Image 1 (cartoon, rainbow, N blue to C red):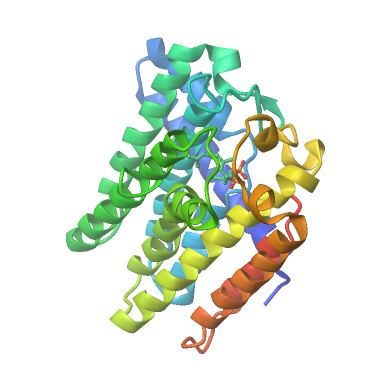
Image 2 (cartoon, rainbow, N blue to C red):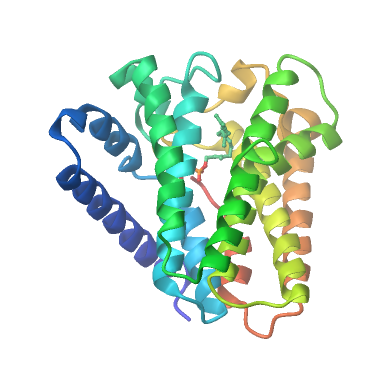
Length: 296
Ligand code: GRG
């Protein structure tokens, strides 16, 4: 297989193009008076995120020889949901961030009301996209339930609510891990398991993937916290040190930088172990190191 950087670069290009095509089709189909919300959706969707969730969905579907068209469409839906969460997260009522992905946050350009609606539009459109997947109806329903759980109050929204609940409070490591398991990890689970549902997997494989996705989400969050301390603006596209400024508990603030790095390495080991049952899991294995060593 090609080096993971190349695979990710190639897949990111495909996802970027599919997002552009999708917005073009939406513009053609919808009433031109809706252009302002479409402009706002496009602004955030085409801001150049890493597209890591859709890439994971497609590569997992490929690993199990699943339906790749469905996997790309599902991946796009997850990117819409991810994009909505970032728009809402940047609002003054939440993290109050002026920059995201190297450009002004959505509400700084379109206003707070439009930013709320843009998030709502992306979330609801994601479910329309899921309902139209090129899969048999029972699989579509399974995927819709998965995404609703992982994006909703049992997942990402629940995690964000815990984040708000514990704002400005000193919390222990277990509580922090719980928050991130929901807030960041849940959508990674939807990406991994959703990709697998575009194919056919057995119970043992599903449990292994679930375990892998949990460790991968945790690893992603630990490295995010480390990068908020050690990263640079140009690569991250947002100011460094915002967690500290907001007085947020992070792996770095609770454990210190060196121990946070140790925890990242141990979490990466656990993710690798979760893949033991698979004969071929080259992409998922390489992805662990890619996230462990990421700089953006
Ligand atoms: C508002 C319902 C609601 C949820 C917000 C995910 C989230 C919950 C907030 C984002 C806050 C944050 C910075 C979390 C750290 C992990 C994370 C999700 C980082 C951003 O994801 P990337 O790095 O972003 O994949 P790109 O820009 O590459 O798409």
